[in-house]
Image (cartoon, rainbow, N blue to C red):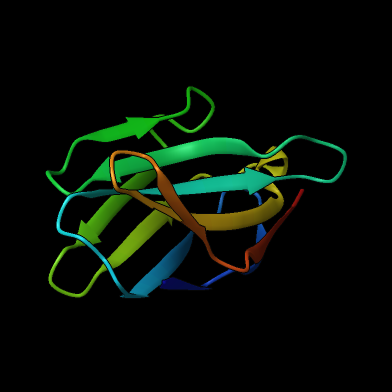
Length: 117
């Protein structure tokens, strides 16, 4: 089993910045992908950004140029730095770890990000 614990959510004004952190523990294999998803009320969960253990990144178009994902493989942590936040970034943000060629997927409990306009 793998456990994911997120931290860093909160309330911020539009244009501000927040950093999210996710710490993974348990049976983690070397090759994996860590992702941040978000879900706003009434919306489906969407992929925001991902990073492989090799450092390859992906960003949703809506956050490109504003969000930066990074990871520390030695500590099994993934960070999401969010800048120039907009009200539409308001959502619960979930950390997700995928390993085993995608067969195994683990989720954190989520952390609320609220951007006031």
